[in-house]
Length: 97
Image (cartoon, rainbow, N blue to C red; front, side):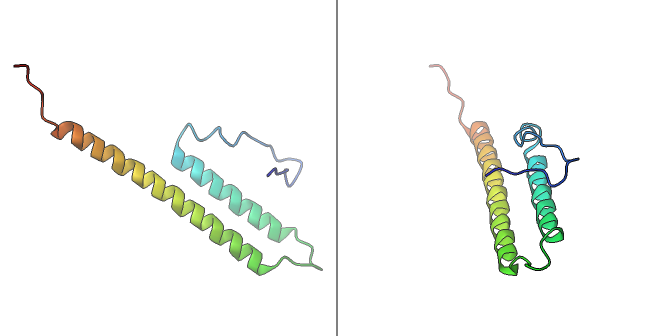
């Protein structure tokens, strides 16, 4: 799927550029972009043929599911790291006999 700028003053950036900085910041950026695009769709729609409200509700539900799944994956990674750290600390030290 490709997108084009809404107005000529907009600039396109690499969507993967923010992901190496901070995953939560990248997620927030994606959420803001999604909401900006949704507002732009509503703002610039043809008044004689408005968009179907069901379509917008469906898009919001899908985005919410994606956001929740991303957060769940992040939480599971944190739990995995915590368990690995605890296992490393609790592991008995081997002794040379």
